[in-house]
Length: 152
Image (cartoon, rainbow, N blue to C red; front, top):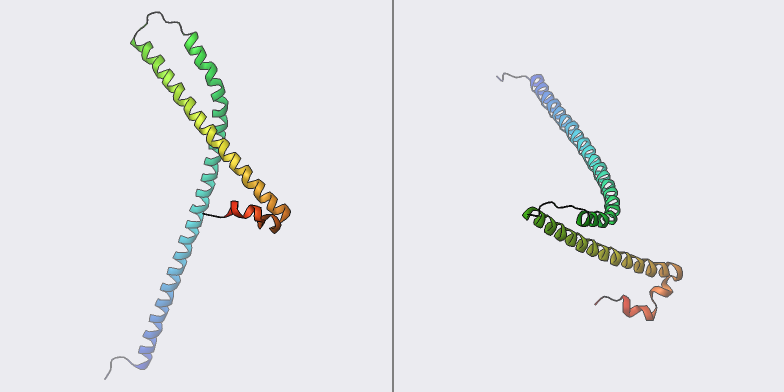
């Protein structure tokens, strides 16, 4: 006295399995689309980072040239500025100009010191590994070099 026959039940099971399979396929397609979007976004961010780095390198080159010209411009501002009526504006202008130049000079000196130390460190590394490449384990495991390469 069951309403459903065996055929109806098997048909219902078949429908359920088809809908589960379709749901699985739909989720899989969606996950693949999301993965492709993530790859696209990641590659775009890598390209954007590369362009920003090249822009910063170009700006650094321009700044290195402009620092040389800054000295000349400060001399022109200090010497050739004709002041008709001196006032607090001129006083603060020259005070701020002097403090700006001192700060800029200090920062340039600090950065040049850092850069020279960084380059010297790189030369030392390249010398050490160059010797290792040239002589192999003979240089690497030498008793003379043993103490200088040990940590602690």
